[in-house]
Figure (cartoon, rainbow, N blue to C red):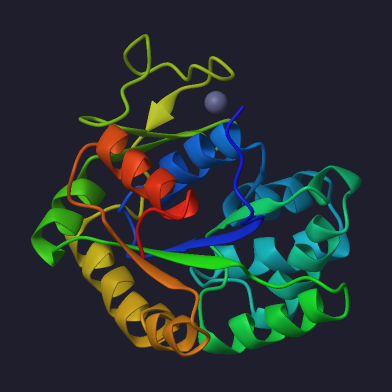
Length: 223
Ligand SMILES: [Zn+2]
């Protein structure tokens, strides 16, 4: 069994860089719980909780859920018993305010973010990858025409649902998402550098090579 003394990991980077895939590999390899913000939000919607209703309303308006709603959902997730051994957070925080609030939340639990992994890739690569994304209509599982094909074309491996291109999935929307990322999420690089826990990861390589680079970082073999 591989282990690392780093138990609370954040993955961030531009949309489409492969954070979800890496979070899954990393959580399995190091026995940490994968907390995917997308999955957590979808789960709240499915269970029709108050937070879920707020998320659904925001998504319906084509927006992200507001910070307070997201923080409420994250807070509930980190207090689950299975998360006590550590987590890999993917899709959160999205901005510096969320990161500050998250630090405070962990602080009162005598925990901290041990490592923030910044997976980056050139803009040209990101736009190319975003164009190939597909999503299951039923369960929200994500696929990619090039990097993550389902076993049967058009059919979800997880639930058998239909895999589609999201209706709002077009180059215009990708540009907007990238702009939001540069404005809101990219400043996390500075935030975590100042905290002394930032590591850069080259996202412009195969999923396996990215995973290997991350493993080296967590094993303390690379800064
Ligand atoms: Zn599915």
